[in-house]
Structures are given as structure tokens and as C-alpha cells.
Length: 199
Image 1 (tube, rainbow, N blue to C red):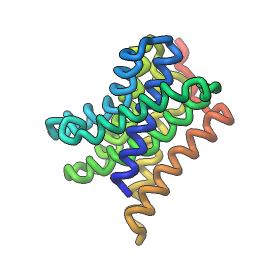
Image 2 (cartoon, rainbow, N blue to C red):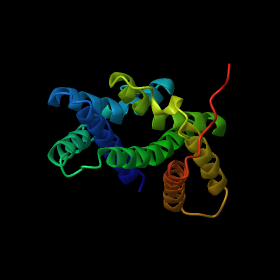
Image 3 (cartoon, rainbow, N blue to C red):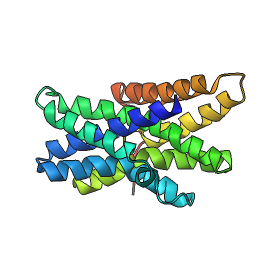
Image 4 (cartoon, helix red, strand yellow):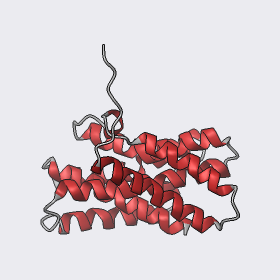
């Protein structure tokens, strides 16, 4: 289950990056680079912080293949994805839920404190999107009024709470990812946001 969630997250973020780049009217090479950076950016930061080098995508070419598939699908179906903003949001949300979980598990495997694991999960989920937005000349979503990183933190807390219950690991993975995705969907639907700081 963990492996397949990793694949889904990588694919979702690759398509999120590709759709953003297409929306910015970049050429195919530019679209691929943005898709690649979005998919692996958070994982590279995570692996570097815990001293796991070479980073994941360099040790397992399957990540590269999955990113390439996501890139090709985004290119082929870009005209069918006429609601580009909706599609981008959906893929970004799936990636957020799955990559938070992956960061949490990597932190646990490294023997880190739960608080640090939650921080690692948040960085894994958010940093690829930060790089995507910066390269596409936008203010990163994480720094805007949308609830984004906060959702990852909530998901991390729920994950460790579920770990204390007599639940199968697969159930914990699915519940945590689904909760993060659900909260993001509800937050956007009802326009939940953090108020900006006043001068």
C-alpha cells in the first residue's frame, strides 16, 4: 500500500506541475522540468535533511518513469482538461495527502521524534509545490491565505494518534491521506483561510 501511495503521489504532483507549466505557456521541455521538480522537490529536501543520499529518485528509476508518464498524460489530455484550474487543484491535493504520509514514514524509519516527523511530512508535501510556483513566477500556495501546510500538520497529528490504535498500517495510511485530501477540499469549498498579518 505504501509503495502504491508513493506512485500515486509522484504521478499527481508531476501532473500538477505539468498543468501549471502548460497554463504558463511553456514549451515541452519547460513543462517536463516543472513536472519533474514538482514531483521530486519535496522528496529531495527530505532525503537531504535525513542524510539519505543519493536521493530517492536517483536510486530508483521507477520514479523517473512515473514522472514521464504523468508528463505525457498531461500533454495528451490537456485539451480535455478544460477546467485546468480544477484539475490542477485536484492533482495538487492528492499529492499533498500522499506525500505528507511518505514524509512521516521516512521520519519514523530514521528514528526521529514525532514532532520532527510531522515537520518532515509537511516539507515533503509542500516543497515541490513551492519550487513549482517560484519557477512559474507565482507566489507559492503555502504562503498565500489558503490553508495548505496547516492541513499537513493536522494530518501528521492524526497519523500518530491512529498509530496508537489497534489498526492495520494500510488502514492508517488510507485514513490519514483521505483526511488530508478531504480537509483541503472542504477548506477550499468553504473558503477557510488564515488571516494575513496587519501592519
